[in-house]
Image (cartoon, rainbow, N blue to C red; front, side):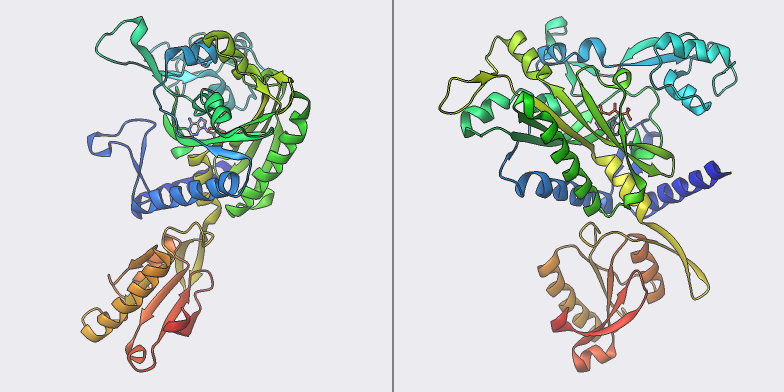
Amino acid sequence: MAKEIKNQAMESIISLAKRRGFIYQGSEVYGGLSGTWDYGPLGVTLKRNIMNLWWRHFVESRDDMYGVDAAILMNQKVWKASGHVDTFVDPLCEDTVNHRRFRTDHVLKDNGIDPDGMTMEQMDAAIIENGIKSVDGNPLSSSRTFNMMFKTNVGATFDENSVSYLRPETAQGIFTNYKNVVDNFYPDLPFGIAQQGKAFRNEISPRDFVFRSREFEQMEIEYFVRPEKWEEAFDELLAETHLFLESLGLPKEAIHELDVPAEDRAHYSKKTIDIEFDYPIGKEELMGIAYRTDFDLGNIQRDSGRNMEYTIKGTNEKFIPHVIEPSFGVERALMAVLTSSYREDEVNGEKRVYLQLPEHLAPVKYAVSPLLKNKPELVAKAREVYSLLKKKHGAVMWDDNGNIGKRYRRQDEIGTPYCVVVDFDSLEDDSVTVRNRDTTEQTRIAISQL
Ligand code: ATP
């Protein structure tokens, strides 16, 4: 029952996202492409607001962060050195009758068995012991590993040397630019390099709306430290992460830290804390912070033959810095924002749906309308107010469709904090009615005070 209610909550959010121009299924006109999503006019603004807030929080407001924007396609040596060619895999099993493929750990999870810490053989054994079948009721095959990188060829020759991959994480574009930033900017340790951008993973079973997609966006930092100072930096970035999540308006009680046990950590990590969030689909990973040691720079030094050591200024002390990596998924942050701001209440005996978005994230800050759209004098005055607000705030919408009640409902659903209405009194006293999204209260305010 609880799961049903949760799924209903998810369905309501997906439906609102589509109905109001936030998120559409990718390639929908052709029947869609699984695991891809397109952002509509409001979705792209909400996503940008989240990404810009992150950039301000972690990059612009600090002296120790440098931004980069690396190419998505990289030399195949990057992915060999990083371990992704050999180990970026998920366990895959198959319905033995219709050959549908599933992620084995997800099959277990869906059947109430915690797969954390299990080897692939243990997962297969658990499937047999518990008589688990595929969702179509057929026996499942034993598992094999499946590499999640999208492979492609660069250039006109299709041989092993032209192989490249769509990057599965933005991190490697940071590591390969570490030396450039050090040589150009001489940063003192500790310092970080940040990047936002697309990442691609050929997920076996993309699901749960944008939560698990095949194309998504990451916001990552590689923070370079003296090896003995890693814990201090880890704690500082963890604290900053909590502050950032607070600025997204996420409720504290829905945020949980999971100290990931060694057997479940990525191949490069000595310590990982996952930040989990109570989504309607359950408690799931929103982002993670990992201590990557000198794994990546060490690999680059070994495979490229280029020296990745950092020299402490004015001394001969040289070493490969260690790295703390906070890694955020934009879609998972966005889904947390959407699900935690979704509200239903009753106004004048009618059900109302609204998004209680923090003002700084709302895609539209003000909606401006004339009380009646067929009265030229009201329209002219409302246009004046609209231009004034647009100059100041940018994110202002002109909305004269339907009656006022309908406009309020529409703006509530997209999370617009204030609706401004110009009426006949406005022509006399230069004031307008401002209606508050959360309280639905209407206040009379002078245009000059807006
Ligand atoms: P999961 O265990 O859920 O597959 P992960 O541990 O593999 O995630 P990381 O490799 O740590 O994820 O990636 C860093 C972040 O990128 C994640 O915390 C998440 O926010 C985001 N992310 C990873 N995979 C996806 C995906 N398929 N769709 C959307 N976001 C993703």
